[in-house]
Length: 316
Image (cartoon, rainbow, N blue to C red):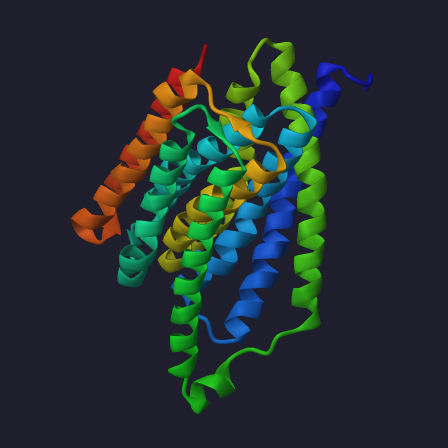
């Protein structure tokens, strides 16, 4: 392959996606097993450990993209990833198997997902998200973390001696899986940025479009993989909790940190279309959850169709 050729860039993109997927699988498996070993419930693991683990691709892509290319890459990757998490990840998972929504997740975590979307739009409405706005997002992240920790302490306090004896032991291989997963995510995110950006930039697409589409879907593959596998195994608590938690971390942690690393300029086009789309998808999925305490296959079809429409409207 010739360096800089379309074939090379496509190869980088595909290898980058593959590394993201493999890294996320290792990270999710290791983190999940470690969390279950200390007695966390499935829904709590989905919202916290698995969600944070599957958010790491967005973190690496957003920060590396902002440092090496432009903040449009980072902002586009996060907004696009959150929309893809709702429309694509939850939609496909619900098509595979209807997803029951945990009452705890809906009452305590979904409000933070709504808050994160509203904060991003409100703080970015003046055209710039800087260190001050990043501090607000990180403060909201601290509040969310405190709520989760309080729930974890309560859950662990309720574990009986018999249940504790039946819990799996934490193993070294789980720690090694987490470390290997992070290493694969770092390398994969860099190759995904390089391959995806060069390929689409050569075709005349903007950095924002690249972030909203190929990078957003690429970084949502860990969520998609984790949620689809969970749905197939009838573990809906992981699927729903994973997406809710990921969307919270994407905005509060990733955008919050990114704003400190490199202030984000928000174009009028983003405020006119992408921000309203993020709010619309967030409110759509919350409405579907509230209507029946579950996401049916019909709901999944609605979400997937909405995501297909979103991508179509992005096309130049």
